[in-house]
Length: 290
Picture 1: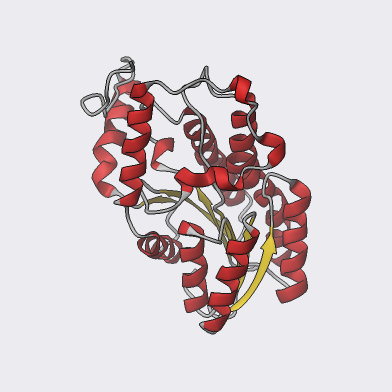
Picture 2: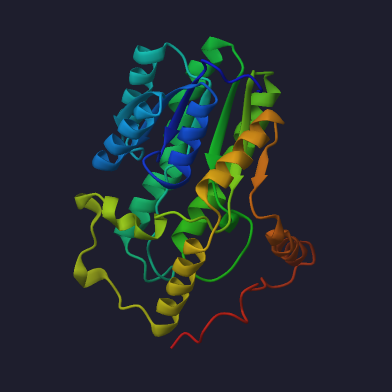
């Protein structure tokens, strides 16, 4: 896709971070934009500022983990603009500790937003796009965590591996039937967003019972702090949005925003191909567990 003017884009997780940057880039390209987020006040503020800059934008408060919310998002999109051409399944959250100490509420929340949110987006919007029979593109946000293996943020990594596999299957199946819908998967490294503070949007029904929460070890606390600092010094979201639009214009599936991390991908591939045990690429940086 190279001509964006007057086409319609839907972006989830659009009130901040990568989602907002993509929404603003869509508006700059002359698109009609539907922005979705669970964070009501931030969504309202984003819509107000985008409209002030001249954008055609419709905000829709959406919990992507709920199919009925995504169906309502699609209805609002069609009611407002009559069609949809770009879909960005971008909403994402993170939390938890090591796999065996993360709570069931942690698992349900991350799987609901990161994986089911993408599934709902595909199930609801792909039939609409197929019926339109026009040029369309879907971008699913995964992570560099979907391509490399290391300790920490286990639930998040599991969900992003699943989003990558889901995106590859979607690409193959749409190509198989000759659909006009293209697919990309966004695989960013550290980006300066607020995802580390995602608990601000955690639903009350999925809050942890304090009795189920294990105290973080000093090592894990240190790793969390390293992750937070990495995000603070990460790429600006606008730069990620630029990478996304370059990929769409070139019909490029894998969108790697941090090419300097490709040697880590090679390391994991070599582990698999040589049938050796997984290598922790960050072993020299990680503190002792205790």
